[in-house]
Length: 212
Image 1 (cartoon, rainbow, N blue to C red):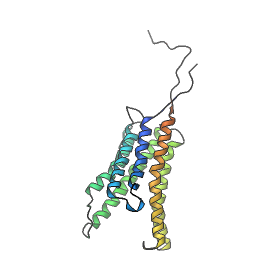
Image 2 (tube, helix red, strand yellow; image 1 turned 180 degrees about the vertical axis):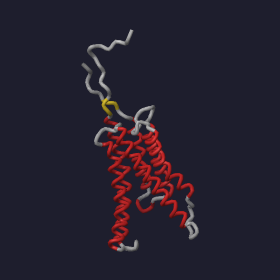
Image 3 (cartoon, rainbow, N blue to C red; image 1 turned 120 degrees about the horizontal axis):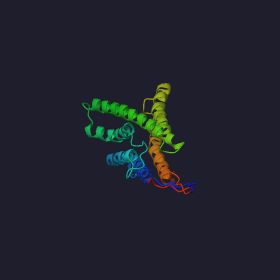
């Protein structure tokens, strides 16, 4: 016989979720139209901190990838890569540095896409996050892929050049979705962390005696 099913809260998910949600909200504190470079930088720092918490957990527990090296590495790369690329990208843009901005954008997209794909697979395989929510990062990645692809497809089909209302509307909608994804995942992580996970039941009878 065992005692009643118990749930243990997961502080790492609560803190990580809070940091992730904050990473989406902080850049918007000044308003949609006046997002500052400082707000974006702070948001990326919070995003990196959130993924570090999800990767390692707190006090040895709560890692969503069970601290497997591949999963930990993917989460850290996903969080740190944007910060590092920002550091090497020139802040002042002129004709001579346009090519560098284009290269850094493609490099960042390739690195983050690969790291995100590995991370969502590792989170699902680790089975630390309860079903069906361990697939939530994969759903979010699919939405991000669609958000990036749809404007390109519409641009080719409709033929807008970026100066009309259709182009502006598509871009604003895509940006809104991209901001909502970390916010939604952060809130979900906080809810799951507060709800907790089922702990192993303790055997009451017959009593378990230590070996002599």
